[in-house]
Image 1 (cartoon, rainbow, N blue to C red):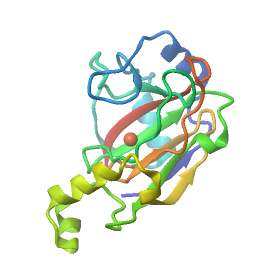
Image 2: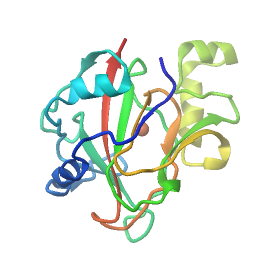
Image 3: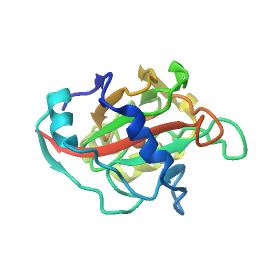
Image 4: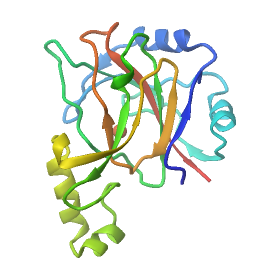
Length: 203
Ligand SMILES: [Fe+2]
């Protein structure tokens, strides 16, 4: 898999794609962190455009089904005000998929992009796999517990890559890479750091 793909000027009409989000409701599902829209949105010809711009051949992508867990859901997190949050270092699933994020807020500082990490204690750069756990001589569950435990603590990781925030920039990376927002930004729907997220499998 490619470790990182960055595509600027991703949508031909980013303001309209952003407006879709502003017209939706943002919710914070129980047991999950951060605000997200109640459903995803796929612009016309999205899959063909993603393939063409990324150079990847998509073999599986889930269409939106009208839930906050959809592909194409918009996310929002703040760095000030009552709903302030600290970014957690985490991985996404399934491991065989890519994640595509599209940044959709203007005037967010470049420092509020996405960072990638290596876990200091284990050297892990990905979520737990049986192979890497074997290499360490521990169980996959123990490796998962260590990464889960340390996720909220930035000092327990070394930043290995950082992509700046730029309006209408897309980035694509393996879902299993350890990552987080570099910093959240803003304190409300208009100023907050909105991005749209997709996962897909590609050959
Ligand atoms: Fe993520």
